Image (cartoon, rainbow, N blue to C red; front, side, top):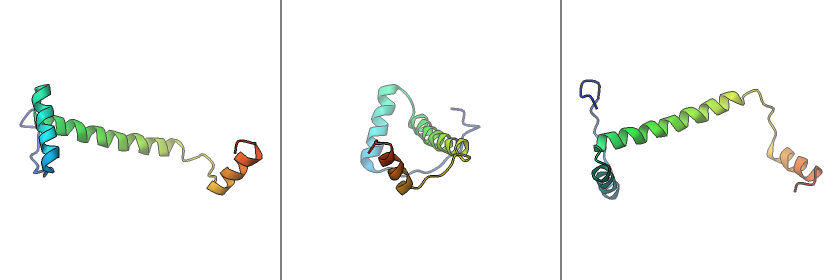
Length: 78
């Protein structure tokens, strides 16, 4: 990680989580910063994928839960 492009932040971890991250860093020969950056990146990517899925489905018709149940019953699925 390049120091010139990185920003410093103070993050407080619960002791057991900090220990797990330190052990993971030592085991994988990576820095704690790299592991935390990867975890945050993955978390944000999941949000982006969820939002994209919502945008892709915005034009789909909406069905209430009750209507879904009635449809499933009518077609012998429930």
